Image 1 (cartoon, rainbow, N blue to C red):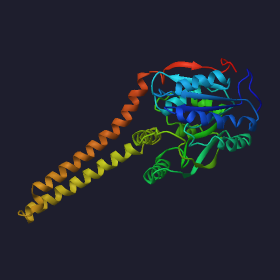
Image 2: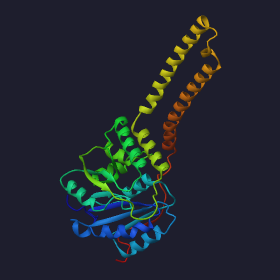
Image 3: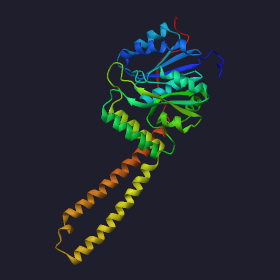
Image 4: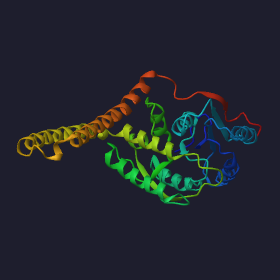
Length: 321
C-alpha cells in the first residue's frame, strides 16, 4: 500500500462539524498528536454543515496555520450523512477515517483501525462496547434499533457500530459513485462488501457543548436505515391488511350468529361497530404511512437535485504553513 501518485496523503480524516467551536481546539490537538505515530502524511477534511456559531471562523484560521487542514463549508445544514458524503468526495487519502467532531469518537482508536487496514482489511468499523454518560433510555433505543435493523435488513449491518470507521480508497470510490440520495452510510458501507472487520472501543462522553444529534434526528436516521435496507415494512403492511380482513370476516360471522341466536346481546351494538371501524382505519393509516415513506424516497431520487451545495472551500496547499 504505497503512497499514491500526485502527492496525495496516505490518511484522510473526514469530520462533519455543526456548532462545534468548543470542541475543535481539543480535537485538533489530539489529531496533531497522532502525526508522529502514523507511517505517512495525513490530512483533515472538516465539513462545516451550516454551523451557526464560530466553527467556520475557527476552521479558516486553522487552515491558514496548518497545510494539512482542508475545510468545506456547505451553504446550509444538509444533515450529517450528506456532510459525510461531501467529505468523502473531497478526501484524497489511501485510507479515509470518518469520525465525529465532539470527541465521542476518540481519535486514538484510528491507530487500531490503521493496524487492521495494514493487515489487508478494506473496511474497519468501530464497535461500541460502552456508552459513557448517555441516558439509559438512549442506550435502550440504540440497543433495540441495531438489533431490529440487523434482523430486518437484507444486508448484514454490524451491531452497535456507527459512522466511525476506516475505509480503503477503493471502497470510498465505490461509495462516491453510488447514485442514491437518502444515504445511510453505515448501511452502504456494509452493502458494498469487501474485507471488513471491527475494533472495539468505549464511546467517550461529549467533550464540550450541547448534544447536536437530537432524538428527532436519531429517529429520522433510524427510519432511513430501515426503509433503505429492508422491504419488511411493506410486507408487514400487507400481512396486517390480510389479518385485518380475516378478523373482519370472523366478526361478520359472529355478528350474524348473535343476531340469529341472541338478538339482544350487547356485543352486536354500536360499540362493536365503532371498534371494528377504528381498528380497520388504523390499519389503513399505518399502511398508507409506510407506503408514503417509500414513495417519498422515490420522489427525492427522481428530482435529481445535487446532494449538497458548497459555499466555500479551503484546499490543501493554500495555507501559509
